[in-house]
Image (tube, rainbow, N blue to C red; front, side, top):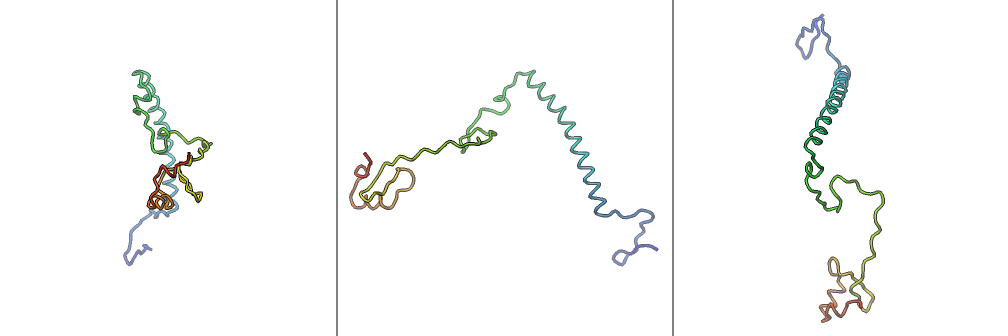
Length: 128
């Protein structure tokens, strides 16, 4: 008997249709073969690169350019240390009579703006 798919007769003959599980096993096998081949090729590539570096006397700077610190303040490609340096206690630059303080960094606090609006100068509020 010939199998029927969506109202059409198909002639599969002696060939059986593969299941998705069979195809997945085949994909997995090919993926492993690919990874093994790439690992084998990488050994040769690394050896040729090392040979060229030694032959031409190249340095890390020659290969990757001068080290530039990013926003983090670290060199690119360097892992962050496991222990962070303790943060310094901010130095207070301004204080009012009510005891409000400001380091002078960042946005001006409302109490500072109010004091300036009332006629005080920043020098009047400086901690001495």
